[in-house]
Image (cartoon, rainbow, N blue to C red; front, side, top):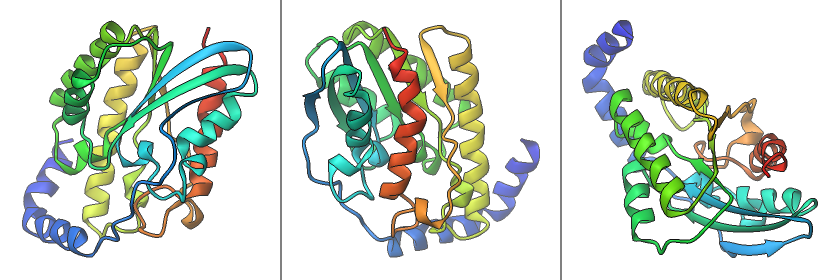
Amino acid sequence: MAVLMLAKIALSPLLAVQALQVRARALQLPEPDGTRTGQAGQGAPLRLLIVGDSSAAGVGASHQTRALTGQLSERLSVQHNFSWQLEAKTGATTALTIAHLNALPAQAFDAALVVLGVNDVTRLVRPKVWLEQQQTLHSLLQHKFEIQHIYRSGLPPMAHFSLLPQPLRRILGADAARLDHALAQLCAASTALTHIPLDLPFASEYLAEDGFHPSEAAYARWAELLTPHFLKTP
């Protein structure tokens, strides 16, 4: 950790320039069209609230049916009367997500899937602050939305994002790994939380054309990783 901090300090002028260059040249992909609420299938009811950032919103997919929510619906509706609500937005941080959820009307869900962290990494949120924000978010989900179990999708390995130049890619990748490790430890301490590592190979076919967001193939694989956990949800 000390080595990483020293590297950040030494490279800070270069990192700042690279970050500005990335923002200037990055391809701005839209959030896909498609319904963000719905119901499908028969069986035991499963009401899922999905919250998060641009990846949760499906950026990189051509339609919500090909994004994470649609891929999950296709799989979970086989065994469940599956209903979902997607509350996700490009650029969302944990702090912004908390504010957004506070503004929504209270309603009940069985479980929540949270996809957050990349924008906290790029905004240099410190691990201590990150953990405090996660605890606030979890409390909000449990009390306002009556959620019994929260599934936390792990942060992606940002060290493989081809959009990012070196050494910015290496630094942000290390920061993402630190936050994900802290999140995994937080989840391990509670039976109401499950951390699900984002264990994708991140070959070129799993990145969208912007070199930053998941492709449709990645969303399908991601849904496959998540599905077994939700099938265990009472």
